Structure formats: structure tokens, C-alpha cells
Image 1 (cartoon, rainbow, N blue to C red):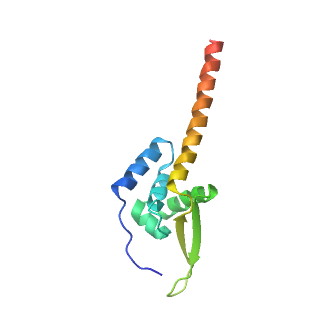
Image 2: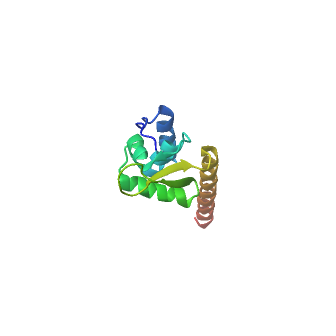
Image 3: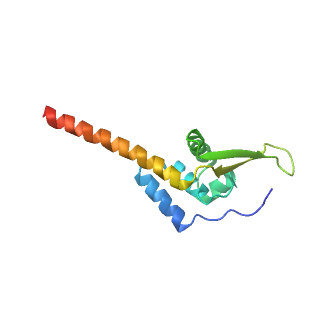
Length: 124
């Protein structure tokens, strides 16, 4: 298993987080998604370091990403000592496709809001 120190979040990744937040994605999910956007397979601890999130926040975000079939989780046994296997995470859905699914959700929500406004106008 690799022992390299995780990288810091790039400017591009920070911008991804900001834009996802403006689209109502919660902060831990946005940070976790941005951390995984490089395409590399990384550990939960790497995500914590890169995103400055706590372990429970990463776990909750990962559950959301897994429910949407955006991430793959693989376990790797530790090479030294005892303990749980290390979980490795990797995006299996390209970021472009994730953005398209977010776009579709926003379009549907916007249509619904506009329909409700039209109904209100008719009732007023």
C-alpha cells in the first residue's frame, strides 16, 4: 500500500466546491466530491486531509456518493499490524456526468417552481 502524503486541494477543486455549494449540495459532499475529482483512488484519511473534513463527515458524504452510484469503495488489507482494512475510494462516474445529473435535477426543480408560480397567479 502506498504511504505518500496526500496533496492539498487545488484552486480548481475549491472552485468546484463553491459552485456545488451554490447548487445546494451540502459542504461535506461537495468537498468529498472535489477531493475525488482528480480520478485517483484515495483513502478516507486522504479525503480528510485534502478537504479538512472530520471522519464522520467523510463517511456521511461517502454514503451519499455511494447511493448515487458515483463512487467505488475497495478494501485493502493493511501490510503491517492488525486492524481494519483500509478503504479506498474512487469516482466511477465522470465528474461531467455528475454535473449533468445535477443540471437535470435543477431544471426539474425550476420547472416545478415556475408551475407553482403560474398557479398562484391564476388564483390571485
